[in-house]
Length: 120
Image 1 (tube, helix red, strand yellow):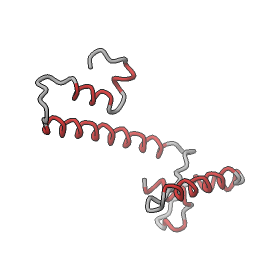
Image 2 (cartoon, rainbow, N blue to C red):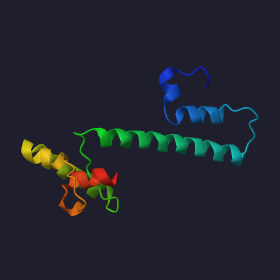
Image 3 (cartoon, rainbow, N blue to C red):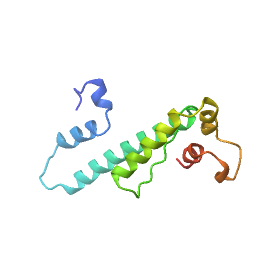
Image 4 (cartoon, helix red, strand yellow):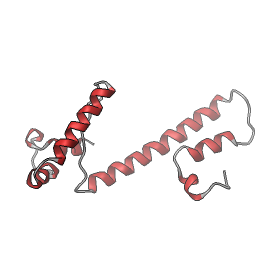
């Protein structure tokens, strides 16, 4: 794993997988080593996702598109497409309102994107 190209060495999962596969003292059925690998892999993934969410929250023009996870894949895609199409056809004024996270405690008064941004 020491000879990895710089980009691959930083890729989530790639480094952890090679470290696991190329580890010293390999024994078949080593569940502890596999558990440690999975823990390293998922920890790296969570950390990266957290950094992404922090970046997205700071980005004022980023719009969160809420997607209901309790619907079928087809329905989720259709919902996202409809929301994105709706935003593309909004007036600039309406779009700016959608981006605005008002200083209010009542989330029901907030635009949907603002509520989603706060929830994430």
